[in-house]
Length: 495
Image (tube, rainbow, N blue to C red; front, side):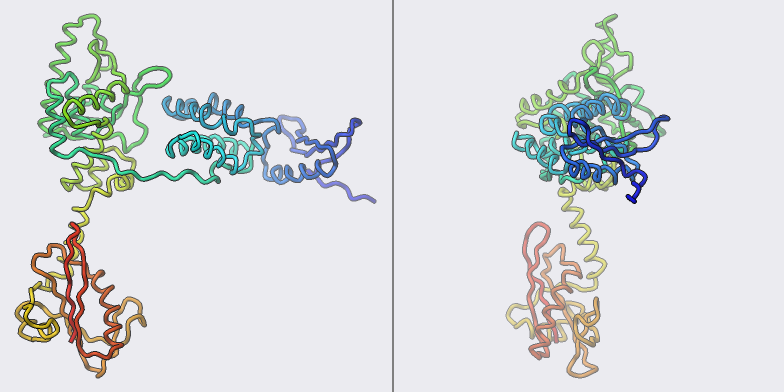
């Protein structure tokens, strides 16, 4: 007796025209029995396809129709699934990614047959066409999000865009104006109709859209200070120019205004009131925006951004973008040793990690201060001195008068050997009660001596060699470099 077919295993049969058909039971849907049908020229081919389908069915997936390709799926995703979940600007970016970057390469591939190799091929095609790593990364991100919806809906079993390796972005350090260049820029915008906008861009580090989205009601008196509330931005998309709320909590922030900034804003308001008086009924500033056109309407963000390079070139500074004014603001604050968390809040970054990744290379002073703090804690009791060059170093270090008068001596009873106990420096002296005195010296002009961890890491290695030679005293010179690159020598002596 033939074994009965198990539930959900499906059936295979041959039609009169010779084509083999396989059907896998998908269960009940909407009161009707649903089946997944596959076909092939041979029974073995159909059986193989059914084996590919059955694991997905057992996981509760409703696989996409065999004929559904990437292009129509993405069209449906952009038009029906995305609206209302992201900003209109982001929606426009997704639409461009689908039509320009994704569909030309993999739009004709069947959704269920899409593989990580196909995604890698798409990224390779974009690279061949000259698109930047950031553009390729954005295209992959859009596809990854679209396929996440398909995965949630059970149309595919895995998100191949998430599996495929994305392009690596080259880290490029942004430019920033020097204090002297910043002052030249501020002098160049004096009496400009939008002087206040350029000053806020440089002094507060506001983004282009954030500046143009400010209204007079955002300027608020709070106790003994005047603050600026940044919560909206002016953006341009397919529907035109309009205001939108800032997306993240970190980007919505309150900034204190200094007296010079308050003065600049007061002069700008007087200028705007004069323009309103001249324009009369043509004036149209319903939202009370601080920066408008000559008739009160919102400014175009892209056109506003293009004015900054012209001003900089006219002032002899060369080409600088409005975003580089923002970068300059952060750089100048870090140069003035403003705490990184304060800089992060000022910039409206999502986290302090973003600030560190972008501006961490601008913090040599902070690192120098950290080294100095550790030196103060660990080495303040070790007074630097300059030995007499006429005598040998070992003789000087062994002279008790020098040790007492010019520097402190670190004395320690050592037992064992280095490496036997992690984190402990141990030595087997020739006599059990022998003590080894260590004297550390550096020149008087050294401002930032090395930290203890740097000294000890080299001290252990040298001490091993010293003991292997059976010497009872010795000296070594180690070269270090200060934060400014200047080299100095650190002398260690044992007796």
